[in-house]
Image 1: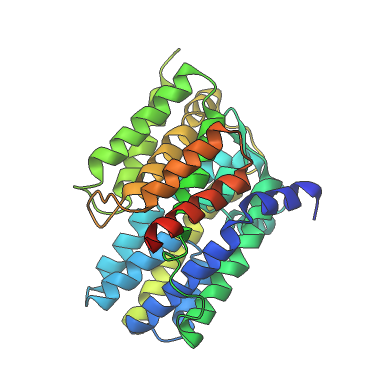
Image 2: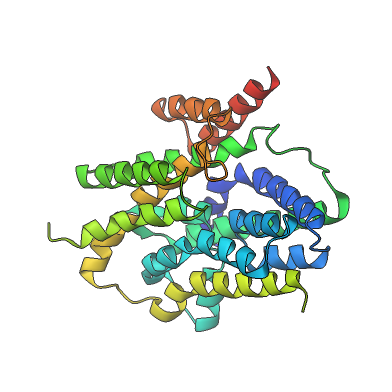
Length: 217
Length: 101
């Protein structure tokens, strides 16, 4: 555990209660969706991606097919393929270590690990992920066993902490016209697709903005 | 295998593979320069899209609700150069207060 690991954890620390609280909400939803008590906890530990898990549980609750539930969740998580390739140079060590540390990639840990120029500090990411992971899995366990112990996360305004984090980090990246235009285009694409496309698609579509970076400058 | 466990298995396999792909297959190696230049735009475009979907996203809809009060408060905090943690706390507090009234 280095000071960079601790710094990463510190940067996402306000999201620890939010992550636990949404974990509880996911656990409660999963039980009402008929997923039982073990499967939701296993899913939180292996998938570790909030939105996709909510989507899959919602589809199952509404009587949707396995294929529909998997498709909804995979679509929501497809952005992690782009993120994981983009952060690859920062990951070192054995294959097993890279595999395990890679699982700590979530939007929040990736966002706080940005060090500019499209690069990340792996230790910031891992530190942030190591704090959020037990919160998410523990919250899920609380949710499936104890029900709504922590109260509604939305009543506490915790759903507003996530866009606030992403916005604060976005602002730090806006150092050039090129980056500013990419952010503007990404935001507008997401906004335009929100009302018409399935969840997940607006974010993936926005990330294709970076293909414009392939053009010669 | 029950429907639930099939979903847990397949979503888990896809997600683990997505997250591992870069670090395991390409870890520690520099990406080609053109790719690095393209990925410089990934963080801003993706973060902007996450701000939009987290602030006004509903189920295949745009929803304006009390989250925007928190995002507005966050904008003020960011302009005042508040630390990251304070920005998030302010946003949550503002939204919580707005929901109380």
